[in-house]
Amino acid sequence: MNRAAELKLSERVILVDVSFLNRTVGMVREVMSARLGRPLPVLDLAAWLDCLLLDAGIRDFSSAEVQVLLVQGTDGDALSACVPSLLSDLDGKACRTGLAEYVFSVVPTENMATAEALYRDLLALVLNNTSVRQALLVPAMSADEEKLNEVTGEVLRERRKGGKEQEVQVVWFRMEAPAFPSVGQWCPVVPSLAHVLGIREEELK
Image (cartoon, rainbow, N blue to C red; front, side, top):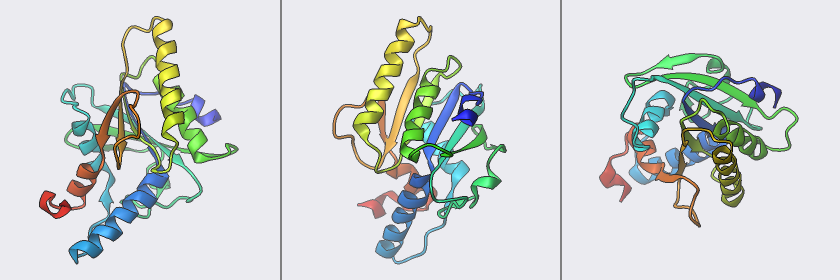
């Protein structure tokens, strides 16, 4: 967590568990490619991040910088379903699109027990940071929703008690609807994945 504690955060932060990119996106590509009978491209990471911003309802891009935190688990350096295909090609780098400038930081688990535990710690760090106004969250598909909700609710309550002036917009991106009400907004992640992977809406039905 030493490196995480040193992070300087932007107003907009996207927190992504790398296992979502490697396992869930990889699964979607494999299943849909077999179903459609055609190969699908690897996921253009920057184009997908643009979709997340739009799906979160963000329309004001006067503040263009978006901090992207990639939680690295046990999969090593590879981004097997994405382009770029290596975390090391992203760490400390920036990428500009028509909507935003993404600044990437890879946060390894180091001595943490699991990537899921690190994700929760980073979630608390992000939501408690006075600079952050919008947090877009992409946890692992297997992440414990209840624990994530507990962390989110607790930090936001403490933030209000501390008199921090502005609320944080929290948006969760998941494959399926949450089993119980989430703290924050919930958005399905399938439409953005389908768009960037070249899957038409009618092909999802």
